[in-house]
Amino acid sequence: MVFAHITIHVANLDRSIVFYKVFGMEVFRRFGSHGQEIAFLGDGPTKLELVEDGKGSVDYPGISIGFTHERAGELARSIDGGFVGPMTPAPGVEFYFVRDPDGYTVQILQE
Image 1 (tube, rainbow, N blue to C red):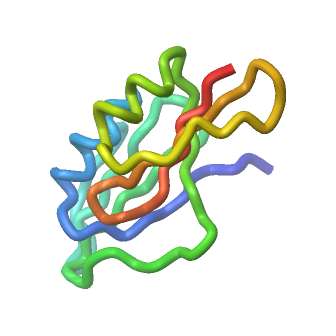
Image 2 (image 1 turned 90 degrees about the vertical axis):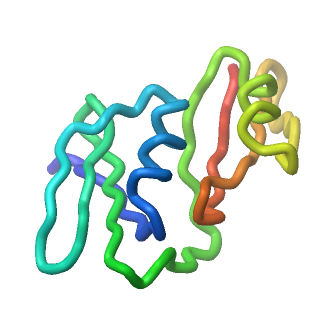
């Protein structure tokens, strides 16, 4: 069994695609289906599925999407002036939290 994707509902698909491209995520596939616009992002075996269905974002309490980046702090500052961090759970590891255009938590990790 392979973990295939995680789905989040977004208010504006194009705006969300632009945001996630900052993390190097390119559109793998995009299509419309049953009144929804759907895009799968990423080039590895696990994708991020963005769904725009006219209902807006959905509250997923406690869920965050995580990425690694060699300059996590700089990236966090450039994305979200209200970022949180750095957090240092172990020596040599730090991470930051930012919000995507729909308010979802995105964690940026640097080791």
